[in-house]
Length: 146
Image (cartoon, rainbow, N blue to C red):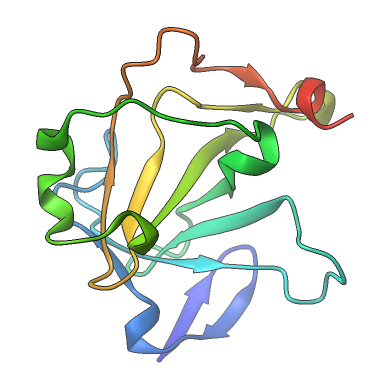
């Protein structure tokens, strides 16, 4: 399918690359379907990817692999929060952090308190709040990646 995006123009994606948030993302409840766009022109693994809405071309969130931010990232989560993901094994889960990139990119932060979890088998996704008290909503990204 052809996806029209604000930042990447027209992008071809396969139907099996669509991930579904049953209840949307908090604050964007009406938008349920997304895909992840990677910068494939990078020679090494890029720090940022994009969570692109399928139905609204102007809605895309920069996301980061949490293990690129904090190698020992280990969110504590109530099982009840993961019920919308369906059946899964831990290796079926992909985890991402939403990033906020202001005009001064040195002040970029990631939300370690509310990661996005994707069941890669059935492509169901949720954003959850973790119980870790030491994980911040606005964790300075560049402090970790110097």
